[in-house]
Amino acid sequence: MTNLFLAVGDVNTPVNFTFFIGCMAMMAASAFFFLSLNQFDKKWRTSVLVSGLITFIAAVHYYYMRDAAMSGELTNVTAFRYVDWILTVPLMCVEFYLILKVAGATQKLMWQLIGLSTVMLVFGYLGETIKADAVMYGTLSGIAYFVIVYMIWFGSAKKLAVAAGGDVLQAHKYLCWFVLVGWAIYPIGYMDGTEGWYDVLPTEGLLDINVWYNIADAINKIGFGLVVYALASKKTA
Ligand SMILES: *C/C=C(C)/C=C/C=C(C)/C=C/C1=C(C)CCCC1(C)C
Image 1: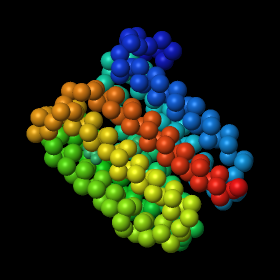
Image 2 (image 1 turned 90 degrees about the horizontal axis):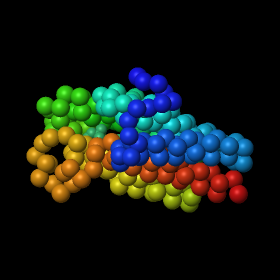
Image 3 (image 1 turned 120 degrees about the vertical axis):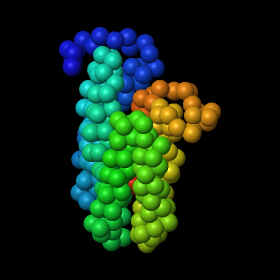
Image 4 (image 1 turned 135 degrees about the horizontal axis):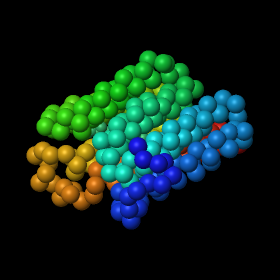
């Protein structure tokens, strides 16, 4: 890696630009979540703390990814990206568990979601590194993704949210939309950035894979955090 404070590339490319903005946005969001902690009832602080941890872990990885991207070390960007995701996506699963705990969510639910998200990411990583089999790995990853969507929209997590009702049910619904629409940006970016039958789709070559991922990360990580923040505020008021 090159000098951390003096990256060599040109910042005036969409890829590098979104790495800089992404890094700053994650840092600002982390400061916002951490500094707000004291204003919440004790039992909601963990949820907001996890929101801050998600954006903070991302901020650190964006700091390194930004540098690697500027130096043209794209394989390192992918590695940092998946280290980031393998830490932050399970924490997003923990958020579902934490808000549904009031309705009796068990750790089993949490571990099921964490297990599925790990499968989703491991296959995604294999697809991006063993490019020849991108379609097969992407499909396996996609299956795990759809099981997560099913669980939270219609399965056990949904039942708990309905049992909790009120603000928790509302927050759960928002998080479900983030997973269905916000998370869908990732497989779209993956299909854009790898080769396969989907090369005929209109998204082909639209954006660099890292631009797709950077936009999706900002929407999902900060958006998720704000939903939890809003729920904690309502429950404290
Ligand atoms: C903060 C990071 C988040 C929320 C990352 C989410 C990543 C995904 C939902 C990735 C999904 C993928 C597929 C469903 C298929 C193709 C491979 C992946 C890993 C891009």
